[in-house]
Image (cartoon, rainbow, N blue to C red; front, side, top):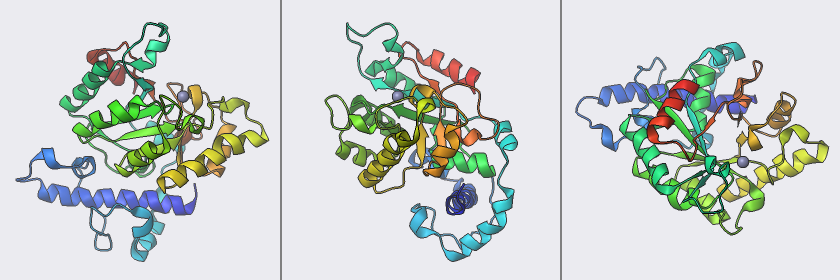
Amino acid sequence: MHLYRLSRILFLAALLSSIAGLSSCLQEGKTADSQSPIETAVPVAAENDTTALPAPDSLDLQAAIPAESIQSTAVVVSSIADAETIIARKQVPILCYHQVRDWREKDSKQAKDYIIPEERFKEHIKMLADSGYQTVLPDQLMAYLTTGAPLPEKPVMLTFDDTSLGQYTVAAPELEKYGFKGVFFIMTVSLSRPNYMSKAQVKELSERGHVIGSHTWDHQNVKKYQEQDWVTQIEKPSRQLTEITGKPTEYFAYPFGLWNPEAIPELKQRGMVGAFQLADKRDPQDPLHSIRRIIASGYWSSPSLHRAMVNSF
Ligand SMILES: [Zn+2]
């Protein structure tokens, strides 16, 4: 991991800890409903000296890292967890959705695992909110995995693959009703095609606080890439997404969930800080580039979803 990147994650960890202190101070007399996930995230009191940190609402980490905090995080670098420690931490449940739209007659039985009817999707999200889950985003997950930074008591990550339009029209507004944020893995070839999101919609999701990640150019299997494929499938899409959002593209979802250890250095070289597969075993050497998710099937009732979350993570 690049030192710069590491500093950002460590800074986030420090920031979360400082918010933890702040939030426990504010706990009395404050109702939960107005708090953002980050503010409510943190039951543990801070040990860090917070004097050098900016206000908790200043989350523009790239621009805002004061020199003092970079110095102090440099001391912490040696305490970044090794792979074994990361694997030993309790996994955060991560759900993967694809199309959010009502079933059509021509949808195959198999396709319906990947297509969740709108009402069912809304039930899933309501169940998560009613059960006390709070969404986390990849930077928070990385801070937790690498430094043990605190997360909400019941964290969940909601991810959306393949760029389909219902993610913008149905899923994002539904998440926002509950103060939730999602991670959208974009396959750039599909941008602005019918029934897919446009660049403007992707930009808007990013501006509304959701995270935009890469899901390659046209969904080819990472295990088959040769030289030039890394440019076509990883480098160019990252550059395009960064142009759209104005933010670095640092998270990746493997098409079909398929990955191999050989792909990991290639992704890291190209700026990917974390990569998400599906439900296979993680890489013992690099769990951050083989993070597990489960597909939240279009067939699942909310209780089925909850059972799968508890059993799989
Ligand atoms: Zn996909």
